[in-house]
Amino acid sequence: MTNNIIDLQRILEEEDCTKPSIEIFKDKLSSFKSGDEIIIVTSSADAWFAIRNMGDKFGYEVLKFWKESSTSYKVLIRRL
Amino acid sequence: MSTKVIQPEELRELLGREGLKVVEVDYDPSTAYELGHIPGALLIDWKKDLNKYPERDIIDPEGFEKLMSRLGISNDDLVVLYGDFNNWFAAFALWVFDLYGHENVKILNGGRNKWIELGYPMTKEVPSVSPSNYKISKVDLTKRATFIDVMKRLRDPNVVLVDVRSPAEYKGEVTAPPEYPNEAAQRGGHIPGAINIPWAKAVNEDGTLKPLEDIKKLYEELGVTPDKDVIVYCRIGERAAFTYFVLHHLLGYKRIKVYDGSWSEWGNMVGAPIETEV
Image (cartoon, rainbow over all chains, first blue to last red; front, side, top):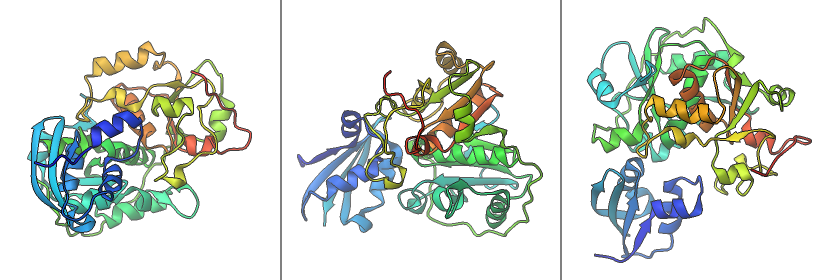
């Protein structure tokens, strides 16, 4: 599996910001190129749901998604 | 738990019942309602529907009547509000419902996040609506504080100002994130005398409300007691509305107001005193 990871929870904690997870995700996504596979990690079920459903809009396909615990949700995507 | 809170499992059982209107209140419907919502849920777009343009204000009573009528909500309907951003904007909507006298309203505990976490159904289908003829029978603006109200009561020992933003915002290290340019303030800090109790102290990690005893202890230990006039504020009023919900509807505080102008007003106002020290 890929080593590319966007850990939204860690970013939110480190930056002590009120920026929404989805905005952080969009910013980080733009640094990847076509074909890159990326794992997104979030503690928010709502963000997890959104990322699973925004591929058409932001240019990626969802390869896999899973829940590790009630506070850890992951999505594996491939940049188109 | 308060009668103003409905649990996800309870709502799931009630879905489709006559007289129940479920309403998702979003700051950004494009990353929430439009991707999926509770079956049958209507949408209130916080920016477009609850704010009055071009001036900065909440919608007036006529605007509220029009909104309710467009959504097909009747005066005696039970309205369940939930939404994105940890229910902040749903709580803001509930505060507006309070101002305009719609008492039969509840908040879904945990909002979108908890509903999704539980694996409950979501749909992209937008329900068809038959407009209603909603009429406001009372308006109560005593739960709202203006800039002038706050200025007049600075350092009043009978008033407790609660800043519900993050500690970094309270200390003036952060004003507003760059992606919200219209929420920016020219100055950082807090209103003199305000104490900092971030809104999130009242919720669990999954966004559901903590036990009432824990919440009561949290506020009372910091001097936020029901015998005082309490004014809550944040940056644009949405997180303050969440704390208003907690203090007023869960703990029963009667003397509470939301200063919805909040830091985006105070931090830009010429001559407004500011503190930065903790």
